Length: 119
Image 1 (cartoon, rainbow, N blue to C red):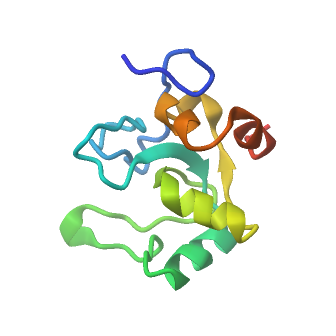
Image 2 (image 1 turned 135 degrees about the vertical axis):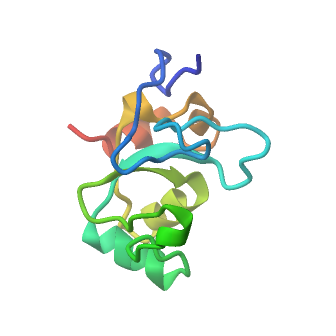
């Protein structure tokens, strides 16, 4: 079982909608996950618009791929680089630390994650 950025067991990010690189509800990652879908966030309308502007439309459903389209309030295993990009643009969604994979701490310090954590 993987750990989270707090050093405890990684918890589920979301099963409705189902998320994660492995579509297991968790932000697990491995070498095949080139996007590092490892940070669990609570989506906002501002972030969804930002992501769409950057070429990744997360709000439009794609039934052929089993993708329901996301709305504000959904939890989602986000690509780490997109979260960092949103952080720099001052629109990063809040982070669920217990469901964020430990590998994220190699790229973003825990203090920054805690500043942006769901309370």
